Length: 388
Ligand code: NI
Image 1 (spheres, helix red, strand yellow):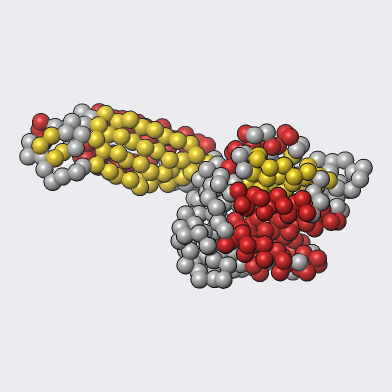
Image 2: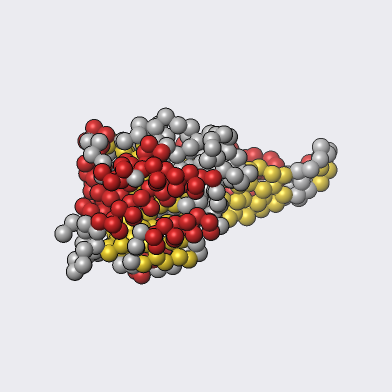
């Protein structure tokens, strides 16, 4: 591995930051302690600007390159939030807050980007500027969207953005990326079926919303099997089916809910259209009524071609070409770095976390051995993107 020397020398200290953050997990936009920790560190490194409160609790640090060197700013992004999971690792640095834990490694992402900011501020071996972006609410709150909507790209003149996530199962020191869609759009839907309640012994006097809802759930399975091109990806999962209260009562209403995962705008449009049509027409056929609320949540995380090649080339300077998978299959998970990639060209890469528990598992821990790899990636990416 061709790592950055002083990053390797500083890895224990960066691991300490990571463990400090790990012990104090915070959810969604409520990342006040984490943002304060990040802000204090960025100021101590001598960043030229440290701006808090972007996208509610996001933090951006600006590091200018060589004096007189004028160039664009690139954005490097980490996420700060944790998950509502009870940690079971038993580690010395385990969560001190019951019911919350850093089970996705955002503690590691934040610590690594801080490590890169320290190196870049101390050496400034580039032209233009680096924006280190620390976002809240990746796990469902859309913190990335909030920062974009807050005008972050324009305010700091950011022309390209790069993101990174650790990946359990991929060996430490290896990377994986792909051009185009790398993570799915994650939409949610609610369907309320209203029939006419009554006595279960006299169903002909009622409109049974349970029977209508059952038919709807069955028919929704045909979106993937009958409507979608088999070479495209779509997941439609009904995850809630709530109705009824007694053995002898047909209820008035049933509430359904679920998620839709797609990798292209066309499939996303198709899924929304078919869910609406199926629920409405089947409810009507049963004499019931369907109210559908389809909510477009995170868009597809779409890697731009040139920036993906660039990111993979940078990773290969560290890991060698054999350590970089350039055609990683996409996952149907979601990622709100997608909003930043809609606003600016860029690329999102996976970095190996080794043989650990999976993301969002109560026994997961970010692998500190990956710290010098991730920090070196950020440093080399910035210096190469902004080379004189
Ligand atoms: Ni994550």
